[in-house]
Length: 433
Image (cartoon, rainbow, N blue to C red; front, side, top):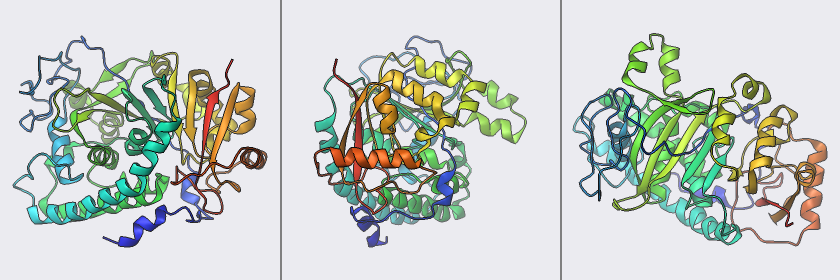
């Protein structure tokens, strides 16, 4: 592995001047529990705490159970893809549990995991172990445990660093979650290439501490699903393990329809089949602890601009069902929340969020003030990186905000650096009444 990548975490890293590929808007994802007592759909076959290597393949009718579970859990809806996720967890994300399938070259996996394990260790030491306690000291004690992370891609690793006790995490991006089933059909000679592609992608993400749209697009073109691999890698970094993976579609009323065998059989066109695997629900818990609480990530592939939210009301209905208040975060979002074409999601966040952490791509100061928020600044900000098209007035306002606040040191980067490579972040909170 290139040992120089971790140096990019240094606060002096300057931002790129021509990030053309980051101008494209990203999409949307969300995390929430399914109704505990809901009956299984056609083809549904797992328990919520199921996490054994012997779980059935997707579409199997035999339920998967955990011998360590204290009591049976109600079945989840839809097809269960945990067996495929467990293979990806072991082979691509280098999780500590499970066996490498005999069809794959164990030496190839071992070399991949040696490099990736070193990258994980460097990332934990250089970012997670620094950022997590710092953010914990800022987070209110009574913060909602439901998190919404717009423009978040598959960035579960940052979400768990920011909100480790979240029960539900919603990440949102244009990129689809991707079909996990190709791991069962991947030709063994292709394994080394696939693992190298995903390893390089993860190293870039760790180095930059944010997801660039062009990197996510490259990852989406691999045989294995990049968003899912990224999420599984986050579980390894944070000491968790997957217990369920299912796919779903958001209905117009905000409810979820989980993908069934009948849905797959009915999808005749390639585009229809791909659409079935755009939104994914990953359930996970602390590795090796069957009594640990299960946390939920839902990734929704969605364009968050006003036109798409108006045309398809399901996502807003789903977000409304997350509760009257949520915790929120955003970073590396190409300053889309400053843009009037994203006023609907901006309005939803201001209505439902009492506390939000971000880089410069959160609420612009004039909007935050108008909505009754106050903003606390950390680090050094001399102006935004030119990702997207940051508004000149809002850029100046944010610079003035930092100048008006006490200097508070920030020992890590959170999303974009400023235009001169400095680390900074902004906490937006509801003004005391």
